[in-house]
Image (cartoon, rainbow, N blue to C red):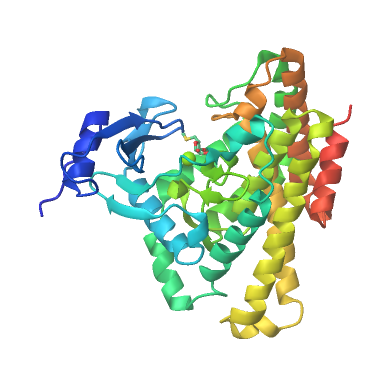
Length: 394
Ligand code: SR1
Ligand code: MG
């Protein structure tokens, strides 16, 4: 078959493609809607009118949708995403959408329709709590990290995977937007003029720069495991009983603590947007995520470790401690970035009362800074909550 030529899909060409691929028989009455609300891609939901059953076609655009055509972006991210979903599915199929088909030239992934679930960020903003969210995310992260690392798989095959998931352009976005731009006076930053004083304090904080530089270096250099790379609450579909992780286009071999840190950060941002008496279920999720992650990771370590040093006294504890400290630091960077950098979160921006919004953002900056600077002295998830409590009371 000849190689397909890339062209952005429209609602009608997406339907034609689904039929051409044999996903629906010709003549099926189909409806299609572009439902993408993320920063980068087109997402088409195509539904068979008779059965109500649907599929999703996700297509990468050759630029960052959130900025426009002036920001070109590799289409290779689509095949990274398909491959990451397939790799994750081999360990935790219950937590990712099934991929039916992918085409690197068209930059598309055809996958399971998850519209019976809700994007977790949206639900959390509406006040939902998704009681199993942290249990599921903790297990997802523990299993994917362990089984793709030098502890859980053949160490030569791991090097092949490291190569397969080299993702320089998407990593550069994170290196810039999460680890660099918000800490300097950079044009990508975006914040209310009333926050300038607080923001300039970050830009002039040499100690903060030093600690952020160390975290950035970890992101640049540590190839521990295949990470999702963008595990915020907008990359998660949820209900009271189910959780599905989507959008791993930023996937690459990165540091163990990064996904946990991003998830923590986005929970903290949601907690900051809530009234104090509504924060408890979100803070519970932070403790539970770490609890499940460390329990599952430790069990896999004891039972399936391929590394001869695995039984050495103290090795697992040392690794878990490093993951925790790094996750706290990464969370701090993400909290700051989502507050004053590019690609904000609706949790904070959606606070309609201006004074409340500014107050929540000031607290976010304070919290982000504290997490980065004090990460070595935080020994448990409860210490994160204590830091949150300190920065969220005036
Ligand atoms: C230009 S892309 C902006 C952000 O959207 C993605 O979801 C990532 O979080 C990225 O940093
Ligand atoms: Mg995304």
